[in-house]
Image (cartoon, rainbow, N blue to C red):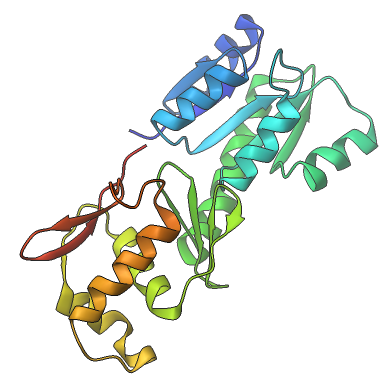
Length: 228
């Protein structure tokens, strides 16, 4: 089930924000610091992160940049209310919105809902997030990022990744995958799918010899297995 992650070192603030978000119909999880937040994200990708900038250990600024690179929307909470700090949060750190403390919990809910509407409108047409947010496919630009770093793919590799990722759990035969890219590449042999899958695994899998995401369905074809 999708959820919103609230990251703040003050338990009372976390509890109040979560309570109001839950009343608005959202499932929530809490994290008291950066390590806890990263663990939560690695286990299940949140729809959005409400993030305090002033955190012990890993700073909120660093977390915001990391979450932005993963394609996660972030609403920053901070006591730093100067104009230049707002500009830094939005332009340099990649936050989607910025709320100074003290704040109204109702305003947090309204801002979160507004960001989610914008993200849903954009992502439905342009982006595809995979592997708990570690892989981000920009469909408009035909660019693939892994952990925020661009991965160069051939047209065939890109078409295969987009096809598999758009329908996680569905098994595609080699013939079906071939149909997805043969018109662009001119290749007509089903065995070329295996070669492209092998190359794709070397580019996106942490361990290509033991792939976590692109699964072989023996005797049939391949499927995307979404794992954290």
